[in-house]
Image 1 (cartoon, rainbow, N blue to C red):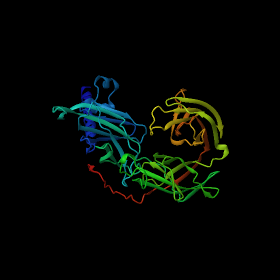
Image 2: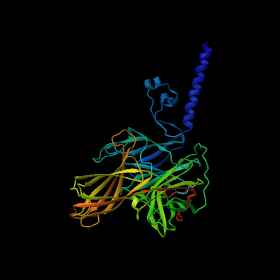
Image 3: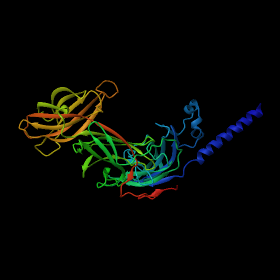
Image 4: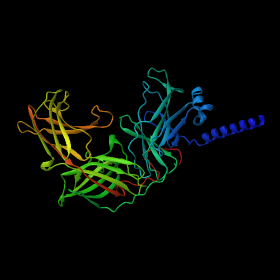
Amino acid sequence: MRAVRASLLVLGVVIVVGGVAGLIWRQPQPQSVTLPDGSQFTLLKVTQGTNHILRFGRRWQDFLYPVLPPKLRLKYPPRVMEFAGNRPDSVMVWFQREGFAPADGEWPRVYLAVLDDYGLESPLLLTPQVARTLGASNAAMTGPGGGSVGIARQLAGWEVLDYPKRSGGFRLRIYGNGADQQLTPAGDVRIPKLARNSFPVWQAESLPAVRLTNVLEITLTQLETGAVSPEDGFTPVGMVARVYSRATFRLQENNLPAENWSVHRLRLASATGITRHGDGKSARWQAGQHTADAWGGLWLEEPAWKVQAEFARTADFPAEDLWHIKAVAVPQPGRTTEHRVVTNLHGEELEFLGVSGFKQRPGPVGKTYASLQVRTPHPLDALSVVLVEVRDEQGRRAEPRGVTVQTGTGGRGITPKETVINFRIEIPEGARLLDIALAATPVQQVEFLAKPELFAASVKLNHASRVPVSGGD
């Protein structure tokens, strides 16, 4: 019996030692970039699946954490970080940051973006899912008074759901805030080949492709990706990156160009579950064609992307779309004029709430800004509500100054049950009453399958980058 117990003990030790050695052996080669604040940002580990673990201790319970019973975890607390992934294809990238003394415990922000071989980028990852500051290390730096300041060490895990999933590997571009507070690329790290899942393969249709609704003839003429500048797209906060994609349409109503219509919402989706979104804010007419942009590159390994577009009328509304509200009193700054009116258009209930005046006048002295408020009992998917015109009692026009949309529960549980649309306007000086014209127009929905192409200015990088790349393939 003793011999059996001894054999089992030796076997257990061999398994544990072998497991520990395997854990150590599979750690990737560290890759580091230097952030604008001077700190080092180092890739420690990449995990995949629904249970992500980073060990930052070297004791036995740290190594054995995945198989440690709950009672032993309580008795011998392991030094690990853990995150439950949102999807089976979830990837977690674990980074260490050190070499910087954060002021008041605050670290300057770091942002990540997935990068493919063509230089296309995903939308930014703004915050890690889990982070931990371990305190000062043995290193030190000079503080404001000339003394030494301990340098903290931070560990953070970022969940990556948006990456080229057919190729298996990708890059991460690391951004930090530069001296001018603009996003600055600090460098790239390579993520090794990952386990690949089986995904459907969509077949692209030839462009131009035509769809007919009961009102419009909608033609998708082009799907592009890789916009880098205001000349070929829009870029956020001064980034020099190919982060925008564009769909171009031709619209006709009664066989005539329909420039009184615009993209209301745009969704681009892949068979691997990646989506890009755009709306009417980026939509514009140029040379008889209508374009709308979405943020994020379209991974070119995909044979086709689904283009789901919604269009809404922006002018020349038929009578059944219109809603007129007369003689609404102009509120004093910081006050609200309640003027509740309810109507029903195209089977949907709409409620006008009133006009709110702003306490702070953001424009030049003498100009008054206010907000017209319209509420619907639930989020509207089939209708677009538009402010057509506002005039005062003298016939002067109140100029539109933007729209915001808020969806909430209305104090009734957690499910969205109402939408409040705020139309901001600039009211003429001395106005007392407002006549308001609104429209609720049915949305036209179409869908295409298209293969994106690069903007003419974009070229394949072949694993070359404009910024430093750390480590090996």
